[in-house]
Image (cartoon, rainbow, N blue to C red; front, side):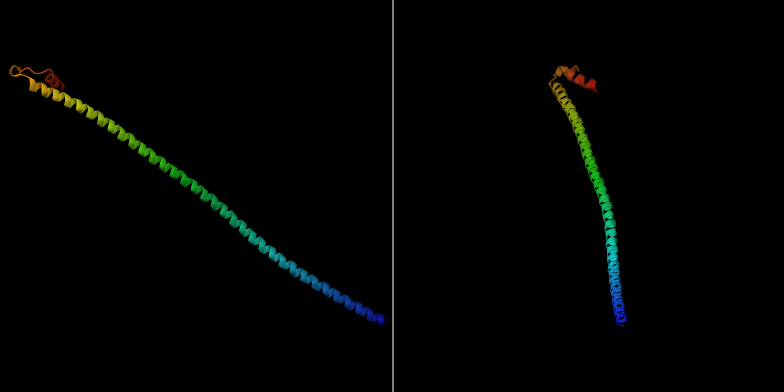
Amino acid sequence: MESDSNSLKNDKESLEKDRDKDMLIKELEEKLHYQQEGIARVNAKLSQALDRLSELRQEKEELQSRLEEWEHKKLDFKLQKHEKLEQEYHKMSHRAQVTKNQLDELRREIIFLNKVISDLEERGLIDYIKKRYPPSFIQYKNKK
């Protein structure tokens, strides 16, 4: 009987050990499941972060491209403005030269006309009666 009792006791202890092992296995499986869920959440967050990083990189590249395009347009605008100012300067410079040439020509004309008037005023009564004109007046008539 004692051996039956020992045997029962051993079976009981064995069952308790098995139950404890089963509980321990169950706890460890729950911990493993919880940790796997945690890893899945971390992987999901990592995936979202990588997606966001990819989007930010693409956005950065687009912004960089737009910035370069804007700087290029800005330089083009400055160049066009410079070229326009340069053309206006050349146009005004040419106009000033033409005007100067016209003024020089008119100055020579005025000097010549003053000489013609002076020569006509200085001619004598005999020259007037004989209709003799000074050479400057004859040159003036031939110019017309």
